[in-house]
Length: 293
Ligand SMILES: [Zn+2]
Image (cartoon, rainbow, N blue to C red; front, side, top):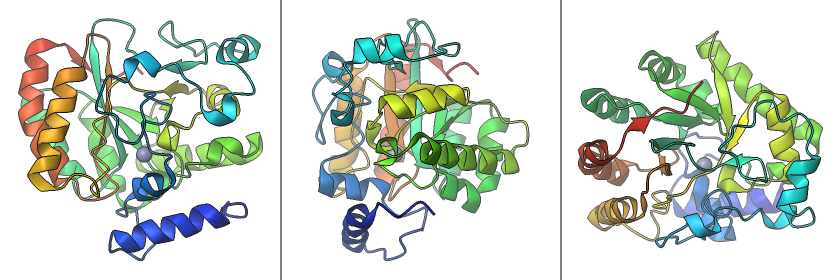
């Protein structure tokens, strides 16, 4: 547990979980982003550059570093960053990869695995589409068999931290390293030879330290360009959410884009319904890829 400095975060999480009708703070199925919604630190914050309700284009702001990173301007931060062996050509100057680097589009699903993951996997299988899954350690611990399915189906894995600590990047390099390593270890308990080449900070709250530690562990920091905020079930409900996801992805996806959605962290029925429509559509317009391992 790395909770010592998380009193506020824990309180916010508890409040959000209570709102979500779930009082078990460690439950992987709890809404990870509920806390983000309350604190304004949602996915979409920095990884995609948009705010908590980023319906409009987020690409333009995609290069923004997190508030905590502002002390180190992104350009110089990346210049100063040591070995960039794993940094892909498509990475921004702050070391965060937000585009695939080609015309291909990447679907990414965060916060799982969860009980909904098999349903998404079945849909992807049916359409013969590969994607990238940013998994949370405690969820991997609960659903190791789904991690095995993800890998077996040819999808790519991404480390989304042990328990979705949205402030992890502000902690010490050692704390960050321990968290990411623990998550990778848990993934490899499920799939011993798993390739884990990507890291996505919860909430997109990347910091230069987190990016650097991830790089040292052989992982590329992965942002996004399109964020339908499908985690925000407080704001959009049921079919309204489904339509919101469809419209956001449909209107904002461009060649090279990375689309952020969620297969865990709460009720994903709207996400599943949206992708039932979106998968064939996206497949027709773009080449959809699992990010390369
Ligand atoms: Zn997340």
